[in-house]
Length: 163
Ligand SMILES: Nc1nc2c(c(=O)[nH]1)N[C@H]1C(S)=C(S)[C@@H](COP(=O)(O)O)O[C@H]1N2
Ligand SMILES: [Mo]
Image (cartoon, protein in one colour):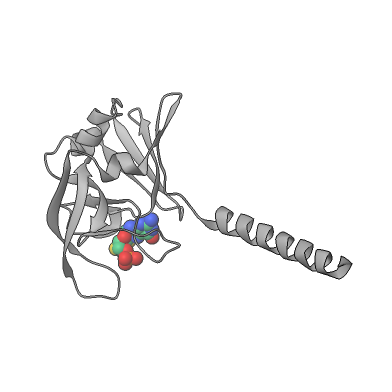
């Protein structure tokens, strides 16, 4: 009886530790927008169900591969910020989970149908870097044939004053 109890205890401990490990490894995608002193957490569901979502074609140039015709679904950035009531800065800084960063100007943001926060590629939700994808969110610049600024794995968007 005592032995049985010990075995059960050990099993329970193993189950609890496994559970905690699994939970802490499960990343919930999140996006943060910073403006002034305010840090706003944007829910993934807010983005996935956004009324201004659009699907559009784009050519993807990934290093070591031929250009590929793809379809992205995303929200035009200016519309996203409008819907969140976030004032646009003179410069908009994007930081990714891998340390990559790019900056956009307000003028660029106001170019119609050019800048998109994409969350789906060819009808599938984009996966995180950990899961081997380019997502969960990537900036697509439709009229930029060079994809250096198509920042993947966006973590934070920060509104900045003019430099
Ligand atoms: N987060 C992040 N985004 C990024 C990069 C990166 O290293 N990290 N590389 C950029 C560059 S230089 C290119 S050409 C495109 C495509 O990158 P890939 O060739 O790694 O797919 O993503 C851009 N976005
Ligand atoms: Mo690149």
